[in-house]
Length: 470
Image (cartoon, rainbow, N blue to C red; front, top):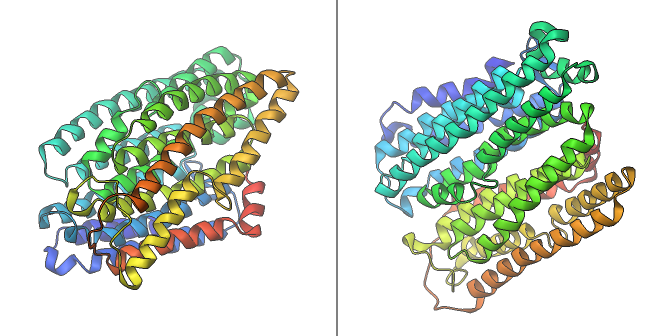
C-alpha cells in the first residue's frame, strides 16, 4: 500500500524534469492518481498496517488523507490556468510540481505515521518543500517571505522535536523503544510514571504545532507568506499542510487526555481563545482577500483544536473537513477576484458573464457565506456540536457558569469576524465599478469539486462515519 500512496508523487517528480511543453498537460492528470489509493485505503478494514508499526492507517488518518487528496486535485486543476492570471515562467511551473511531489510524500508520512519520529520527518519534509513552492512566485517579496517561513518553520519544528524527546523520555522506562509509537503510548498512558514530564513535552510539542498554524504569538507570518505566494500555493498551506500539523495535535492530545483531560482542556482553551481574540481584530482590519482568508484560517484551526480538546471529536472533524474544502476554494477564487493582481474588494463580484462566470459568482458567494457558518454550512452544525461538547466538559468539572461566559466571549469575537465577512461581501456585490473578468473551465471545475465535497460531507453516511472516529 505504501507504494500506491507515494507512486503518483514519484511519477509527478520525474515528469517535472521534462520540458514544460511535454509535461504541462500530463502533470494535472497525474495528480488525479493521488485520489485512488486514498479511496482504497478509506474502505480497508482499520487499523490497517501499511508498514509494520511505523505507518498505520486508522479511521482518522484515512479521513484526513482522503480530504487532502480531494484538495490536491482541486489545487492542481487551478495551477493549469495560473499563467492566464499572473506571470509565471516555465521553470517556476515545473518547480511547483517538483516540490509538490516531495511535499505529498512528506504529507503522506506525517498523516499515516504511528511513530513520533516518522511524523516529525514527514512534517519537516512537507515544510521544507513548501519553502520552494513559495519561491515559484519570483518576486523579491516572495523570496523574502520564503526565508521568513523557513525561520518560523524551523522554530516550530524544533519545538515539536524537543517535545517529542521529553515525551519519549517520560514513557521509555515502561515502554522501552516502543515509547515512540503513538498506539503504544495511548494504550499505556495511565502507566507513565512521569506524567508531569509528559505534559511538559505535550505543551512544548503543541506550542510548535500551534506556531506552524499561525496561532499566538505568531499570528501574522502565515498571512504574509500566503499574500506573497501564488494562489494555489496559499491553498495548499490552508487546505493540506495544516492537515499534517493538526493530525499531530490530535494524536498527541489523545494521549495527554488519557493522563489528565482537565489540564489538556485548560491549556488548549486559554491558548485558542487568546489566538481567536487577536485574530478577530486582525481580520477586522484586513484590507485584501488573501489576508482576510488566511487569518480566518487561523481562527478556524483554533476552533478545531478547541472542539477536539473539549471532547467534541465529531464537531472537530466536521469543522476540519469543511475548512479543508472551503478555504482552498476561497484562495483559488481570489486568483480571479483579484483581477491581474489588483487587490480590490469593491466590485470584485461584478463583471462575470456566461455560464462559467455565473457559476463562479454563485459558488464564490456560497463559499463566502459558508465560511462564516451560515446554515446549512457544515460549520454551522460543527459549531453547535462543538459548543455543546464544551458545555458537557464544564458540567463534569462543575464549571458551567464559567464555560457559558467563555462561550459568550467566543461568540462575541466570532461575531466580529462575521460582520467583517458580511461587509466584504456587500462591498464585492454592490460597490465599485464593473469590469469584465474571465473565468476558465478548470477553475470552475475545481470549485465544483469543492462544492460537491461539502455536500457529501453533510450526508448522513458522513456524519455516521465521523461519529465513529475515536
